[in-house]
Image (cartoon, rainbow, N blue to C red):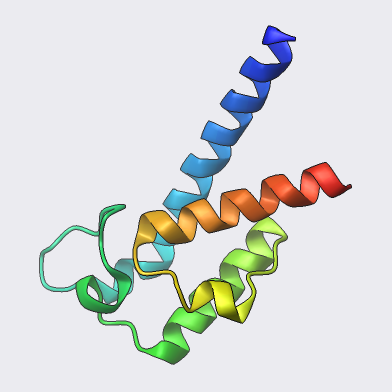
Length: 98
């Protein structure tokens, strides 16, 4: 059982890393000045994205990671880390349901 748990934890960590890298890539053109985009970056304040752009980013993430982020959930996402955690949680849920 431990081996299965370790594998799941490693898979989740790899997915978290992949999601975070993809978010950084998508938001890089919207970086404010020379400030780095970090997991703690508040999307609406630490980048120059507008609401249309963030919806485009979310759609890109949905397509890339085969998830669907409900509007009521996306409205509550403030930081890069929250966005990544949402994608990972939805991906984990879809694997369990499959």
